[in-house]
Image 1: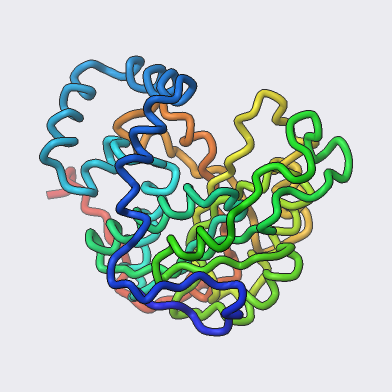
Image 2 (image 1 turned 180 degrees about the horizontal axis):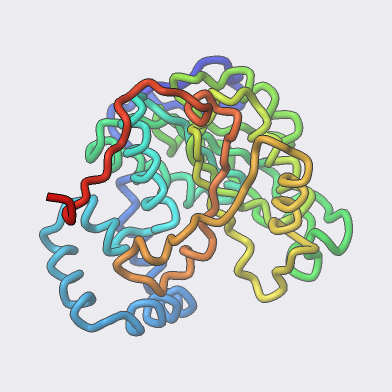
Length: 313
């Protein structure tokens, strides 16, 4: 896996090691998450409410199944990353790409970014598509809230700081940290983003409306810098206080109002596409529609689709 050029070495995380240092602690991370009461309760609620025969079948998949089968059965940590990564990789194969870029906005302690890197490795093995991974964060925790739209009843300045040096050392060579205000790091990121590795997935986890609104500027580059339909995970729309007038939902609504040829919307029929339909992340999966992408323009470069009619001899 290779890195797109153009990002400052001061704000990047590289490693010359052939392996992935983060993978060595992954099993311990899984165990720690499963022993947290809230995580375990959520897991039980999501899985116990599923049909018994599917849960029994998933035990066999967990023991003997392929990576793709495990993702289909939601048997990986952070299904909200695993499912869209496979989806964008399959789309990349269809349109002849070899690499795509993915990003997490709001890295905090870096567990999610390391997990994203591990899933990228597994997805590459399953599809052949390689990944450039980017993590956007201030490195010092959250800035001050601007007003009620940032949900200050939940978050405040300095929440979720990062040990930048430790995380840089843990990241594999195909991942970079972009440290600073996203208003300052996004322009240089877009300047270096190649159509040969378009942005295909974004996890938006900046909590605040104000930070999320600035982060969505990442979708205002040239059309070929994205997949025609890129995947988005909105982390903070499941809080009890979530509403269209605050937080990420407001940021998305304003982005849609400001951009004529770029729109963000929930993934249609997402629940019907999954074997297990009660997972919370299904309500958090959105898409960026790049209507000005060349592949979404009228053309006639293939044979016409023909529907057979079995009623006509």
